[in-house]
Length: 362
Image (tube, rainbow, N blue to C red; front, side, top):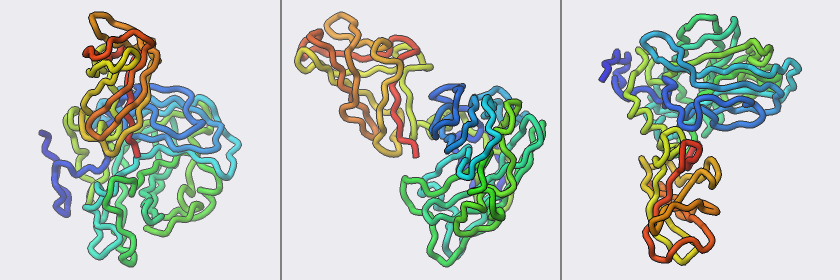
């Protein structure tokens, strides 16, 4: 275990970072996706959301083997592939992480004794830009922002968010829904840039969220890199907290689990039995208890999956969710007349192009 410097207000040395996958080490979905920008979504690195609207700009998002020495070997790289220099008022493009309210209770926000929070990260770009980092309170529609500058070298940005005692009416909800949002504003129209940046806690005014930023989509030459993202209680940016990859992966799998795919053939393995001649019901355990009952999507199409029963491997005609719970996933597998009622059966991915996604993201 790496020993980290203790924060000034005695927050724990281990587990102090409220950001998950801040070292950009886990990418279950994909290591690189092109053509991003038309819609919001989770595309590559776990827990890192692309939030966008109304922009014609497009980019490739990738997990890249680059990072400040001793901090991380990986970063998020955003590479502009289609520029957007005619910026409509309602456009925006952000990199974000949503945080459960129950993971933010240590801040004590909105009541007497609320604590300061320090956000820090390592960033560089293809040129000098000004962008904004914003800590947004989704429960009470309040925010606090900082303008930061990039260079072509890795630099650490530190942002001390003041305590928000407010009037005692704006604590974070203590539940598993989104309460806090960490936003990196990289492109926006006047709806979000036309005011004065909210550098102290304030009730949300859209015009004050991204005032002063440049546009990531100004040229196809533009690249943006970020890693070592940390959010901790107290007024001091401590050394970036290093954690074992198994710990980071488990945290990510609370929100998203992919079986099969890049993990290889037979990693997605379900077992069960045939009921009648046309259906199998197969189950596997979740790798970790998920945040909420996930949604299921099949990756790679049925041609990349097989089921085995009665001594033969057969391609199914369909695979859909049956009972998808916090700790177990049951799927319904159909094939016309090819199964024997009562036989034990297995479902598996037939190569890395087949996978099973279970999504409980915020």
